[in-house]
Image (cartoon, rainbow, N blue to C red; front, side, top):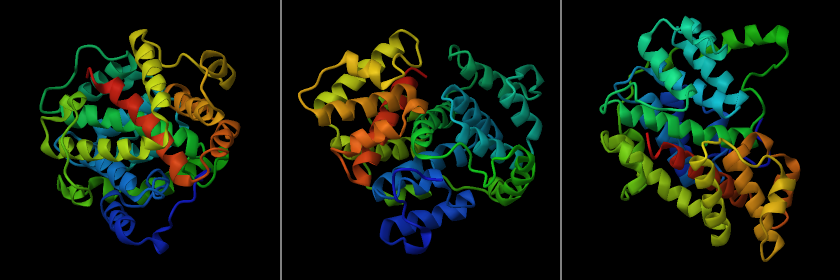
Length: 329
């Protein structure tokens, strides 16, 4: 279930949204909620899709490796929706034992040495890279994408993509979902086909990790530009303060420094209530997205009532955290 924003349904989609939806259905198998929730800003939908497609779906690194990355990053960010979603994808790729080992954090049970090395690298907070320079754009790009989408999902989606969350029904629904994606997960994906949706722009310097794969570099350059545009809803002083807080969190090796609205209110003063509300939403999304609740969202929407404004603020905060995490990888 999508919360707080009204997505454009595939049946009513037009223009860019319709074109992106068509490619998502073809290449991903289904137009799922993490893409649907971006549709109030068509360019952001396109940027999100191409960042996902050109890293997780396309390329030479095995899909199961990148799905293992997806689950591992989602565990770090406490994103139950994405953990379930990519457990489904790993099972659809005939990697049920791998998904089980990662979910249970029983890494010694991972038989594939490459997958185990990458999962342990993620869970140990990075360090020496267990991949080569050719693999770097796809793997780091997938890491960046899931640091972004986890934060968005924690705010805008329910706890699972499965129709039924009852324990007795989860096994059945997981099997049905696995069958649904079993065809698409084995499809051959031609790199670069999503780039048609947005105009070419230069790659920001902090995305140097993407340069080894032209399609990944072009996808992330476009995505970064759409985020910049969408994030303009946030006052400049808010963005500056949030970036400084994220930098501090990265320096002190903490995933989150602030976990409640009360702490945020005590730590920063702004000239007006709108900026204060924007700061609360953006900082919590970046550093503790699982704690963003209806009160935080409603306080923001008193001053920024449009779906596109909420989506833009969340996207900027999520992407800013993701790019700062990945700049050293």
